[in-house]
Amino acid sequence: MKKSSTDTTVAGRITRALAERIISGEFEPGMKLRQDHFAEEFGASHVPVREAFRRLEAQGLAVSEPRRGVRVASFDIAEVREVAEMRASLEVLALRNAAPNLTPDILDLAEAHNREGENAADVQAWEQANKAFHRVILEPCGMPRLLATIDDLHAASARFLFSGFRMEWEAPTDQDHRAILAALRSNQIDVAAATLARHVKWIGKNPAR
Amino acid sequence: MKKSSTDTTVAGRITRALAERIISGEFEPGMKLRQDHFAEEFGASHVPVREAFRRLEAQGLAVSEPRRGVRVASFDIAEVREVAEMRASLEVLALRNAAPNLTPDILDLAEAHNREGENAADVQAWEQANKAFHRVILEPCGMPRLLATIDDLHAASARFLFSGFRMEWEAPTDQDHRAILAALRSNQIDVAAATLARHVKWIGKNPAR
DNA sequence: TTTTCATGTTTTATAGATAATTTGTGCGCA
DNA sequence: TGCGCACAAATTATCTATAAAACATGAAAA
Image (tube, rainbow over all chains, first blue to last red; front, side):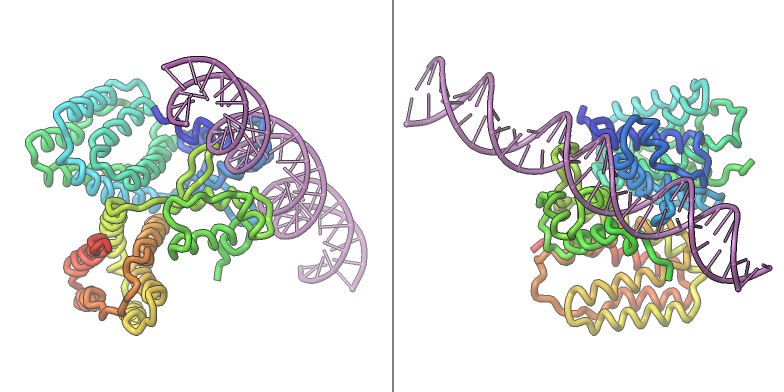
């Protein structure tokens, strides 16, 4: 496996660690991120921390005001909806381009991920399986930039999911996923795309606590 | 006007300068970007240059391999098509959300930008007017993340436009733009959206030299 | 109460050290 | 001679340590 910059450099490791904590909700929206603090925590200097901040900023997980520091990106209901709409548009685009390249093997793998999700013990596990499901059926589109953007949006969605307004959680049988797979298996691309769009937008409509 | 981080800090100025050169084609795809070189050129040290690199990377204008430096992002015909498809999807989404907020004033402003483009003396001027046209009709969607993503995609499109395969250039009367405005004026959102999608995708279909 | 100015804190930038990769060189061997 | 391999030198990215600039805070003066 090609090792990404996230693993190789100190800045990359810091990026990953901070992203994880923001997504998991450990860092609350609006929280100030002080470079010296993390420099000390990771036993590094503040320069790689700054580089990590730039990446988080690009992913939409943090916002930076010049000379005033960077904070964890806030997200209100409008932003959640925005991310959901963007994901819906782009995932549909990806699916339409992936469809001609989808093999039964890929769909079986997706189904496996879906079952994983249905048997998940907690939200984290479910989210991981959910991400894998979407990834697997979209990846064959062969559009790297599109996939990267979708990943960023997915991270933003996950933030919302973990944002503590759903403490008691139970694994849902993901009917939408099943419907998408069935449509793909019978070559009904339009149906699959429409279901996917509705499915993704639904996330943005969750009752906000 | 709110001053962006691009103007305030050294890293920001370097980012802007390098982005411009990449987009304009002065830096060719695949070209190695050495931090010490630009540190010297901008009379700065290499740290702000590195931060600029991170941002260019996020915008898709550069790619970085850990410990091996960063290069100007390549773009083949497939990537151009990818960017065009993404733009089409996202601009349609933006337009649909902007439509309810569009006023006659805004549409008049857009029309002015379109005329600017038609009278443009060179590609740069045309591109600037073109960007302004799209921006003006999409901005009222009130979705900042969506707009930011569209901006990045637009920059990538502009790269393609400037890539020297269109040396002799003449300002086109932009019929698509006019059609979009006419549709919006008569509240035919679907027509406007469909025209916009076709218009944006067409860019990706330009005969490659 | 408002303004000014000093002080501490934080971001930003520089200069120098470290580590990894690439390039060049020499040697052995076909 | 030509090719491949090992090893050394140079180049370059990465990181640390330190200094400078900007900002926030709060006390003193108007």
